[in-house]
Image 1 (cartoon, one colour):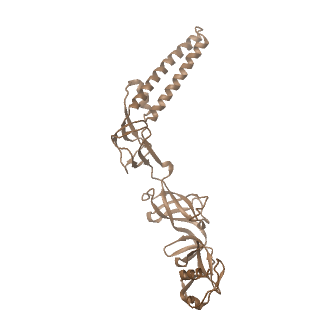
Image 2 (image 1 turned 180 degrees about the vertical axis):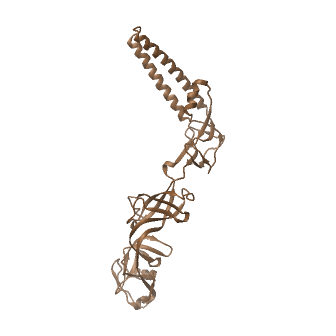
Image 3 (image 1 turned 45 degrees about the vertical axis):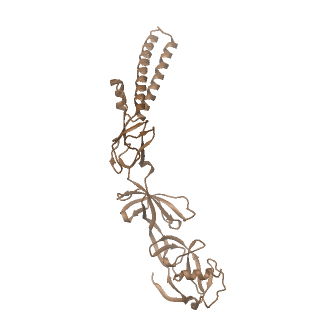
Amino acid sequence: MKVTKSVFFLALASVPFSFAFAANEEVPMTAKQAQSLGVETARVAQVKATKTLGLPARVILPNNQLFVVSAPLAGFIEKMQASVNQHVKKDEVIAQMQSPPLAEAERAYLQAYTQYQLAREVMLRDQKLFEEGIISQSRHSASQSRYIEAGASLSVQKEMLKLAGLSGKSIDRLPVDGRIGSTLEIRSPIEGVVLEQTGIAGQRIDAAAPIYRVAKLSPLWLDIEVPAAALHGMKEKSAVSVPEYDAFGEVSSIGKSVKPTSQTVMVRALMTRHIEGLKPGLKVEATISGASGDMQQIPNAALTRIDGKPSVFVKTAKGFMVKHVDLVNEGESSSMVGGLSKDEVVAVHGVAALKAAISGTE
């Protein structure tokens, strides 16, 4: 943007002000009065925005990709076989425990299995006798009922062993070899990376106590704070990038509410390509493509806040007028705003002095 060298004068010390300030009202000011403040102006640059740059964002781990690996039963940790940042495979043994409750659960399962087999034999025998007319209907029904109850009890005990981490094959092998043990293997539920280790070897822990946090680090979420004024033209599937890490993704959802303090909306992106450099919790700057609309580019020096809102001083025939604008994106030296016309001229130097002079007359 080319800065106009025409300078407006304000005799702050010698010329009294007699006007009251209000937004969008014209503030009379002569050229002589402006000069002492060194006010310089520039014409607003009208641009067609196709990207929103430099948006603050934070890398988030999707909820369904984080798993807490906990002790299924009480006991003590005998061995830790994985460490933080280690890549682990699904069902890989990452810890080993000694758990007396496991031996008790296996004993209860074998007892239930024996009762089930016995009830099954009795049921089959009574069914044959009933078909031959030797026993009554009530005795036949009673044996069937006991068989069903025994089956239900066996199913409960089997589920208990599954919750303890035993595989189906290990459970089915118990009635064959009858070997009861207290060694419990803790396995990773997914293929991923160990983010945190909370257990240590030799530690006694209760059931459900966490031992590891394991996560799948691809894809990742990016929570982006987007000014409400920049949402025009933005939609799901819009391209998103993090230039610093050369990472790419797309908008997956757009927030339905605006934060009152920052006037921003949370836009969530799903990052899927070149995300090796992104880490959960990392703060980055994101770019969203596909948003379009007529916006204006002005130097950051032209911006001020009046009544808590981003504002500029627009040159008029008689002086300046304070005008609130929509701050779309603030860069290092210039900002994208909405609410100005392409023919308007704004103060780009001496803004602080203008604001102070006007504030002093309120």
